[in-house]
Amino acid sequence: LIMVIDFGGQYNHLIARRVRECGVYCEVKPYTVSIEEIKQKNPIGIIFTGGPNSVYVKDAPRIDPALYQLGIPILGICYGIQLIAQELGGHVTSPDRREYGRTETTRRPVESLLFGDQPDHFISWMSHTDYIDRLPEGFVATAATASCPTAAMENPKQKIYGLQMHPEVNHTEGGIGLLRNFLYNICGAAGDWSMKDYAVTAVEQIKKTVGDGKVLLALSGGVDSSVAAALLERAVGDRLTCIFVDHGLMRKNEGDEVEQVFGHGKINFIRVNAADRFLGRLQGVSDPERKRKIIGEEFIRVFEDEGRKIGKVDFLAQGTIYPDVVESGVGEAAVIKSHHNVGGLPAVVDFKGLIEPLRMLFKDEVRALGEQLGLPEFLVWRQPFPGPGLAIRVLGEITEEKLSILRDADAIFREEISNAGLARSINQYFAVLTGMRSVGVMGDGRTYDYTLALRGVTTTDFMTADWAKIPYDVLEKVSGRIINEVRGINRIVYDITSKPPATIEWE
Ligand code: XMP
Image 1 (cartoon, protein in one colour):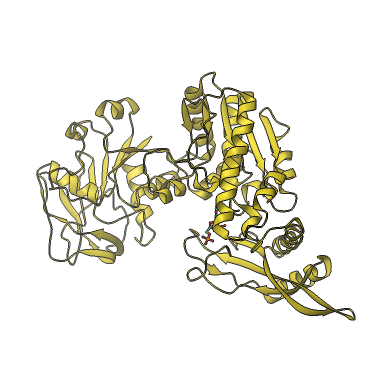
Image 2 (cartoon, rainbow, N blue to C red):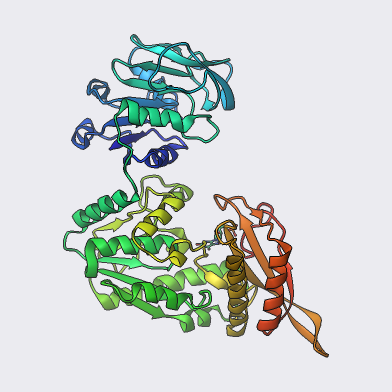
């Protein structure tokens, strides 16, 4: 176990993720973690993260200095190196020049296990105002930049190391190598941990938490809740109940597919066919925000109604993943995943706690875990799908007819993207039924039908996105098939706006 001690920096979970990428199990703990807990966990190494504070202010986050005496290797990054310097008798100051972004960095001519065969000159990613102007006793500086004399320092005898730069960020050349050196050569990690081990550990932890209690999970059929369900099934078997609210706004066959995967295992799987309820409430509504709100509210009601039927439950589980925790901006506090638009915990759950076994993981790690757990590829590699579903892809008022047209067109688009081998390189792609109708000619007759928009984007974080350059021949095939196979559409356009200024969804 590597323990990452969190001082509030923006890249902290990226550090954890990099450690896992190096095949080493790791846990993130807040800096308030007690020395007893650290001793009890007995990590083979500790990493201090960055953080927004200055170490010399009165209430700066600190850690029990007894930690330095335990003989456990420590790597301090950014705030972490400054804290070590200050606590061990060095000095930290705020110079005139700050360092942000790509910075030319030079190694000092000293042997260093941390730097290993890192080149003498490299680009590092810096993000700091303060720097160390006097080293603590027993430390040597191992790298410098033009404006920072201590870009790295170490006391190999005490196994304490520090980096002012961010090795976890890709822009730091050889950054992952520095982490590897720390993990393998200094902490002695074997580097043989994998997502398989994550599954084992997570199952053990869930078992311990739940005891013989009962767990309820709202399953959406998306990657996260599906992987959470598979994990929980292993841990608690038939004491898990999954409620799958089918709001009638899913893509073609999606509800049945989810039922096929989860409806036949050990878990209690309840599919609630609530399309009438949702569509009833959405009748005549065309404002996008109203639609979202109605769907969110109705979701809770349906969930509660079903929850009441199954009786007492001890725990509520959620497939919250790390980016959800960041987006909601609440740090350690329990968050209800906003994509279910759940404003609070369903009142029916007389619950002892919330179980979020994926909270530490990034999306691609959740996928790797899903594969480990044997979930089918179509679930594991499912692209993101908004909670309100097709309701926000039928622009304006929703009708059964429009939903059906959109479902068929969207299915063809997805099938052809998959046939063209583009399914994993385009991060999200879907069809939108615009409310616009225009004139066309089919056979000998004039038509007056809907315009369908196709949207495809490439993105890593979905906060910004570029429109996908889908080859013309693929677009041509999609267009031809949709016009021929789906009634009600006579014109197809491709959305060539990035985000910003547009959003990924149209509503
Ligand atoms: P936008 O349209 O804001 O979408 O660029 C960014 C990502 O979020 C998804 N999205 C939603 N997901 N509930 C969700 O769970 C929603 O109400 C919602 N609106 C958008 C969208 O599909 C894209 O991946």
